[in-house]
Amino acid sequence: MAVLLQVDFEMEGPFGTEMSEGFQDLAESINEEPGFLWKIWTENADEKEAGGIYVFETKEDAENYLKMHTERLAGFGITDVNGKIFEINKQLSKINKAPIE
Image 1 (cartoon, one colour):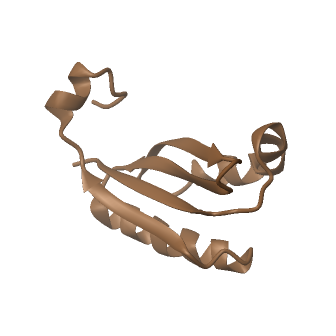
Image 2: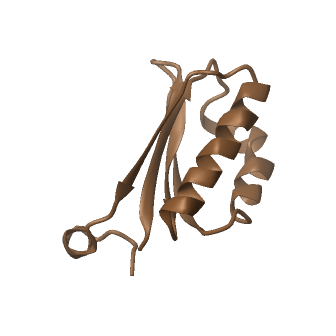
């Protein structure tokens, strides 16, 4: 059963186009993570927050990614990472055009 992982953290930047250019390699590497299905990148420059909404094949895949990603962010000096894993209600999500099977 696919699960959703919500991650957010404080970040000084970059945002917008600079973020897109600076994090392209990171974005491409996420595609190779076990069980990864898709991600929506999130950013709020005014509040200095960033993160993402991910979908993984299993809860275990999401937990493993969150652990690895939290450690990676710590290497960038980001230590207060919020991560939550949710089950997906596919029936209702499909009504609202979610890209899930």
